[in-house]
Amino acid sequence: MKQTSIWLSLLLLLAPACVQSQPWKFTKPIAISSNHGEKIFHHLESSGRHNIAISADTVAVAWEDNRDGTPRIYLARKGRNSKVFLDSIKISGAGEAYEPSLVALSNNQFVLSWEEDARIHLRLVTPSKLGPVITLAASEAAQPSLTYFDSQLLLVYARRDNRYSRIWMQDIEVDGQELHLKKACVVDSDPPQNEQSYPSIIKLPDRKIVAWEDRRLGHTIIMAAQSDKKKSCRFHSPQRISDALPNRTAKYGTGHGVARVALAQFGAGKVLAAWADKRDFREGYDIYAAHYQPNGKQLFTPNIKVQDSFGDVAQQWHTTVAGDQSGRLVVGWDDKRDGDANIMLSWLEGNNWSEDLAVPGADGPGEQNHPTISIDQEGNLHLAWVERTTINGPSQLRYLFGRLNKE
Image (tube, rainbow, N blue to C red):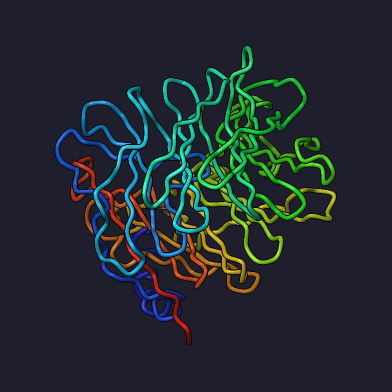
């Protein structure tokens, strides 16, 4: 306890300098949905943590809540300059629905994918209407994650094939205001040795990169694979991207745990993978990352710790990543280093990660967790999260805007 108090005291002394150098000026948070109260639970969960997106003049947030007694998927939108979200609209059908993934198209249009009754569903949302629900044929499928780049819409998900789940990719054509399913292929062509789950995907001009949780070694690791440049629905053999640590013993198990990889593209052809990692088993999960290296023997670089040393006294959860074409890159998560669950950010400064920032308006008493972030074309940051004013109390969805400092 004495050591923790010293760390926290140092953090408070350094906090003003950190705030002064932050890239964004944050507005006050606003509510995303008016539907909250006792026994209503909101979840900002998706594979790859894609729950917020910006298209043209519209900000959209997708989530799951049980306001009518059944988990369903909802979407709320607002104008970029508006201080109020419009009423939420129900996206899913009559079944129990979970883990919506949201991606922005052009012209204020969005696509959502979610799990409902153990199958994957898709739907296009335009400013004026909801498109028809499209259901993938595969049964026992879950954890969808979307990406959209260079007019190509792609979906990855975990599909149970016999004993184990394995990662599949689905190509989707956007034809005006309609979606059409095209080719589908398995990402790892070898028969699965154990569970594959929670995938994330990035599209580059000439290839795709998919990362996921994998238990082929008897404990969870992060694996990744890239597609063949000439055959878009064929992937090279996957590689492990979470470090293998030496000197594991029976006392501490076969390996450390990792969880929920997220991918983000930034700059010209750059990609970051980030996840929660329990290699320091004494302190719980930390935030680790690796950079994609297209011409290297290894698909990703050795791992780097994203959080600063003050975060070593707390557990980190719910990794979210965002980047833009100018090269900005930011990672978000929640942790309790200050005694409360707060939303933290760290951004890339040259080749190094910044000191962690407790986001003003998304920190303080109660619980602020399950963040999801996006960066728009001007470099502004958009953040949504789940807030509870008391520990384990009723939840609300909150949003704030970080305007890029142009200094």
